[in-house]
Image 1 (cartoon, rainbow, N blue to C red):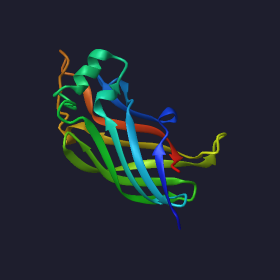
Image 2: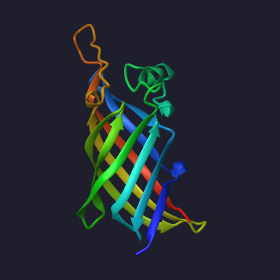
Image 3: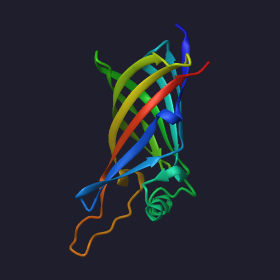
Image 4: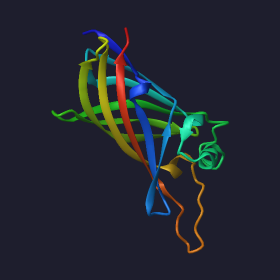
Length: 178
């Protein structure tokens, strides 16, 4: 079998997160600069070798003040830890409809933890330019405090401002490399 290499098509991919604010609504953020290296045997992603990075300084929540706070030492400390990294360790096929569980090591602030992500495989197609593309929807969650993102504050009434749980949501379109 031939090894195929893939990269993220950044114009057709999104990397988001959601976190509860005041425990009543979610705030959504994204990383606007990210890349991945993927190697597969043919179009079989069940044994893929995957590495992913996101640029912390590309974080965007739609609020410049909040983005600056997230980049500060209270959270990601982008000046010292400029990247979030993920290296896949195992892919398990959950069902024949293209559902997988993706396990891997995520590193934030030089702290590495193993996580599990739910992956829906959308399929492989040729686009109008003859490029081979593959699509995935990826969901998971982490506890931010596990990675040293420990800033916390409470409201005057004692309510929590931001939750510990962070939901990860990504739409990833890969393009096969020549």
